[in-house]
Length: 184
Image 1 (cartoon, helix red, strand yellow):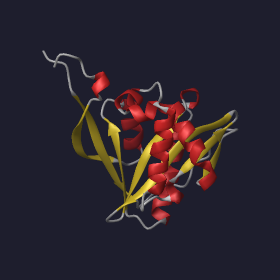
Image 2: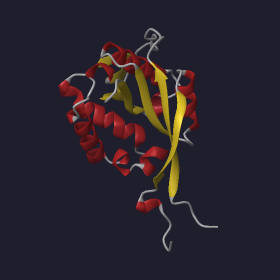
Image 3: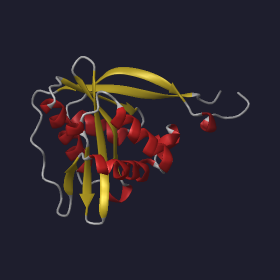
Image 4: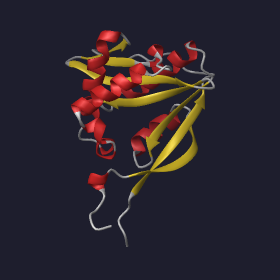
């Protein structure tokens, strides 16, 4: 049997009607809206969230500090960058969560790279960031929200489904060369 050369991703979508109110965060955690001077902090939290994570292996730029900085700068430079859907979460010992939003043509908001530093997971911070991003897209006039998730990231898939997202597409991406077995 040959080794896999691709991995499965889902595109999930939901309408923006009926977005819940922002939820209260645990004591010591505060949502921080987008400001230009926070770009490097978003990149740092993204790096810390993904560097030892499965998606960090599938998307090598997420496991590299400079790659996260370049990715964050590219998201910010996009015409559809949505500041209202871009948030950090500050915790008791520093910033620990990040999400970015981009408006796609046709009135769809796209969630980008939601990440929580491992020591802060399991506290509802991801759900809070999803809701903040959804509300930001809604205020920006979007009618739908979409995101992509690695199919075997079961915790993320379950989170998004519990937030009203439904799978609209399944697709495959090539594994990074460094993960593909040699001799194929």
